[in-house]
Length: 331
Image (cartoon, rainbow, N blue to C red):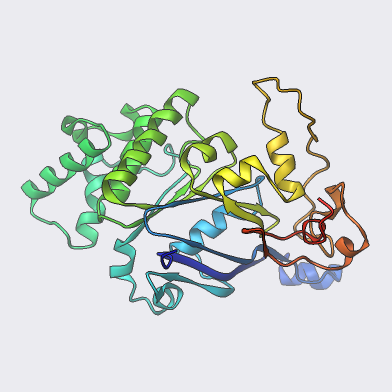
């Protein structure tokens, strides 16, 4: 295996969600901290796609923002092409680094400035990074970027409200490609789109990956989408990765009970008749997570050790999984 292009090392992010100081003093309340991301580690090889999946609120989007420097980690670090990106972001001299990594946001209706034309939106990264400033060259480069996402050069004079959701997301992709990045963080880029449009955008992203050798972190809660785009899948629960495996192995033989529950929630179109375990219970309050394994209140295989000791992410049979039951051979 080659060295990863992007690597997260024990990445953690805590948010202080305490009430105002005076209110806490009067009510005698302690400070409250949410561990949105708790010791997440993974690597993504150049030209490959890692998908992060999990229920809403598990920390997927926070991981995305940590990787591109929109948030500073509470602890841990992000390494890009062997360099400590976290230190560069903190020092404020990451301009060259930011050209090499970009982000596609979830909602194409909110991530584009409605007062700007498509030309201004796509040209902004080129101007900001000093890649192109001459008006004629800018128009030509914007036209090339729009063509790469299957839009016409004439669309550059239009405004976001004149496009459908799928077309707006194509504009977002063109903007992200403007600086010729090597790594794209895709934060649920198709969740706001119709199913038929989702397929078009996903196929476009796969084509761009093949043509440009792009590396993706793809965040989604749609397992059908993940199966289509990913090479490796990380399953998150309450801020931690509980299973990390190649796509084929994870979908064929899921190990962690939470992964099994997620896969069992997919409708069985083939009507195979296999036994299925419905998803049980609800995600615990992140302000007061359960002790030990955070999944144990919902797990059918939980025992005393699960309630007392938090499992480490161990490599078992070529798959990394954080589960006492799997470690002990009970499932």
